[in-house]
Image (cartoon, rainbow, N blue to C red):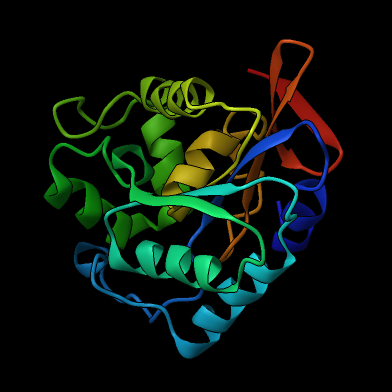
Length: 209
């Protein structure tokens, strides 16, 4: 879901959380060296603009991965948000917690690209000694968001493109690459309505989780 749609739909009373990719970062040329790139000036401005446009009716709780550019994104949102910021903290499940042995996985990403990597993962082509089963990894993230639900807050989770793509597999056909790769500050929306938790990666489509 695009940034503009996330902002617009976050105003609905059912929305309790958004999960977004970090803002615009420096260029990555090698997946094995992908932890160190920071936000660009454009990225910081985009994150501040996002924070400025969020609804102010509830305090927000900001969560970010341990990678610095996600923390930077969270801090820029905190700086510009015009309502109350309840907290800002690191969350273990917003990074690549599912990768146990990075070297072979990241080497393959360099060879085949992100779309094919995600497809290969769901096809079971990687050893589970190297990377967690994708369905288990997806459910761990969803469970964490649901268990953290509090109707009094809007939760903002700042993560990475792999995590957003993994979550989007609830709706999109991952094996056919038939989905939009998550852009900077694109993501998903989570809603709670009549005792149901709903997932949306498209403004017009919702899935019960």
